[in-house]
Length: 464
Image 1 (spheres, rainbow, N blue to C red):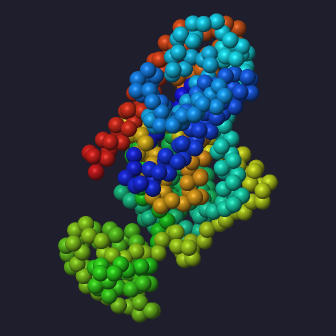
Image 2: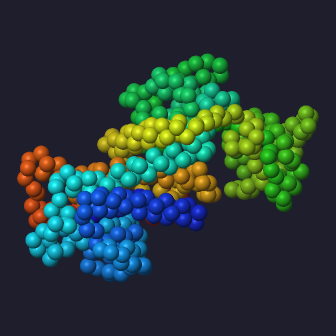
Image 3: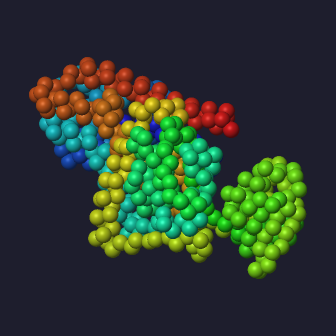
């Protein structure tokens, strides 16, 4: 029984290490789920490995471990091929393809000697533990930190959108009210709701004091999924300087903290998105900046070379003093945190299923939405934050549970289908059929992993 990972390559060491830590934890707990139910039903487990001790999926190729120790009947170890992990259960057809052992009469301690329902629980053990892991993490996070979010009504200055947001029909300064006629209560839900919009869906916005409906154009989902974590739609923030880097263009122009920009070359630049756009339009040209300092108007002339940094940062939505936005925080007592962990896990599971369904839509191409290790690593925060790390790791745990439920030979779901057939029909699937389908399934999974990570490499080198 194996657990290959068809996920996702990042430039940052922090993100790579978070990915390694998160997946190692989840793989170990997934395999422990199989181990737990195997031992519960007195089934011998011959190996318990984090990563593969062979060149997956070829069980007889390059067999060696970085670490191994035998305790009782089980060899515990860490393999050299870091694309998953596995437990080898006696009497079970898996990636080890131990045909000699399977040719012998079944022993009482073997998987094949157990009742179908017991074998079903052994197969579902990893998925069950992935779901439980997500629940426990969410319970812990909500119990310690509570739940902090930005109410959509508190996005005072509307949204700032990039070219993709504009192609959808949005404009910087819009205040998004609804998607598909349903009110949006939390700002971070806007993009999610747009991605999951119904056919012919609309976005309700307030623009220049007037309410209007924008029809979501065809191709929107594809544009958003290709953009990834871009700045499609962000809370709009004023152009007020937070910090000025020493020796920068801004410092040499004597700009200071709390200077608030009014215009660039006569065009409005009160908001960061306006200033950034005007800066790009005026690269290598004289720029006349008008700003407010201490309640009085002032100005400065400077020139910014192409692709250069001006050298200052504005106050952002992450300003700890919440200068522009009031965040809401829900606190949970231990009992409430446990309930929230259950409900939130269910909501995330449903959300993942909704996302997965998009693969079958005409807007989402596999080559645009599938990714390898780099893609998933890039979704971790560049700077380690325990809260964010735990929340995203819990979501990956849910994703792994769902992926392993898919009825693909070689995945847990493939074995479950065979077992359900046996339970319903009373006839056991032949070992020869199991061997052949498992071999085909493992090769398909390896091809999918190579394809996903190949896409990451292609995007990194050829799509900048």
